[in-house]
Structures are given as structure tokens and as C-alpha cells.
Image (cartoon, rainbow, N blue to C red):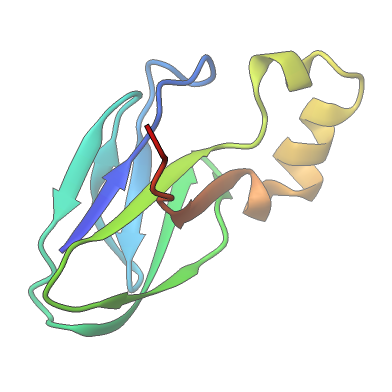
Length: 110
């Protein structure tokens, strides 16, 4: 199982990110939502990435076994960053394949 969390963001609040596993669209994840994707094709290595419009994240290689893999996904371009001149253009055109990030969820100490 792959569990993906999208933290609550101020960017693209009303829009979901499309989640792809091994190139197949498995569903969308909304702002502040956590979704679980049961991998029917079994344990082993899988590529996971997210998209929104024509922008996407890089692919992340994950190893799926008996315990869930916890991931996080979000946007690099925040409302604050989008106010910096040229930043919107940079992420929407030049770095569109790195507009979103996806990573293994880090355990945080209380």
C-alpha cells in the first residue's frame, strides 16, 4: 500500500493533484487530504509522481512491501513565492517538471 498526504496549502486549494503509479492514474488528492492506494500488482519497486495541469513532480522510486509506504506531495510555488518577479514564469514554464514535489514522509518528533 502507498499512503500519500497532501498538506494543507494556500496554493491550488480547490484543485486536486493527479497521482500516478507506474504511469497509471490512480486517483486525485485534494488539499489537506490523505489517500491510500492499494497496489494490486504486488510488492517491489514502483514509480510514483503527481501532476496538475501541464506541470508535474519528478518520479519517486519506492519499495512496496508488507508495510505501507508513506509519502507527501505538494507544490514548490507558494503564494508568497509567486509574488517574486519571474518566479511564476520559472516554475510554470521552465521548471514545469519540478513544479510539484513528492517525497517519503519523514517521521516528526512530538
